[in-house]
Each structure stands twice: as structure tokens, then as C-alpha cells.
Amino acid sequence: MMYNPQLETFICVVDSGSFSKAAEKMYNTSPAVIKQINSLEESLTVRLFERTHRGLFVTAAGKSLYRDAKYLIQYSKDCLPTVTLRGNLQRIEV
Image (cartoon, rainbow, N blue to C red; front, side, top):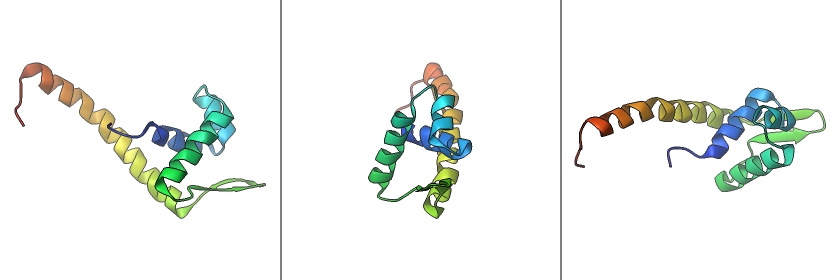
């Protein structure tokens, strides 16, 4: 797997500022987005957001993951055309 699809959801939530706005952008439901974020937090054993009655705030760990996730996803997208092109041109033994 090139990257965890939950990272796309995480980035969208950070960029949107709320679960509901992210869900709308992703053509999904708020409960589904929240479930993905909860699952990501559990797998990383870290809180990515502080949830308060005033809104959603990104934690320090969340900010760090946001930067890294943006890089990983962009890198993955950038490398796929190169890999596909090389795969179609020649066989490379590893």
C-alpha cells in the first residue's frame, strides 16, 4: 500500500476545520469520517484532534502528521506515472 487512505480523510478534516465540512467535500457522512479519524487515532495511539464544544483543534501530533501526510500523498501521486512509464518500457530485475 502506497499510503493509508485514512490520511486523505485526515487532511480533508484539517483543511475543512470540521468533520461535517470534510464529509460534505468527500461525499461521505459525518459519522463515517469520524469513524475513520477515530480508527487512525487508535492505530497511531495518539490524539490528532482536540474536540471541544467550541470546535475542532489540531493537536501538535496532528500538525506533525498533517505535514508528513501531505508529503507522502503527494510523493505517492508523483511517483506513480514514473513507475508506470518505466514498467511499460522495460523489465527491471530487483
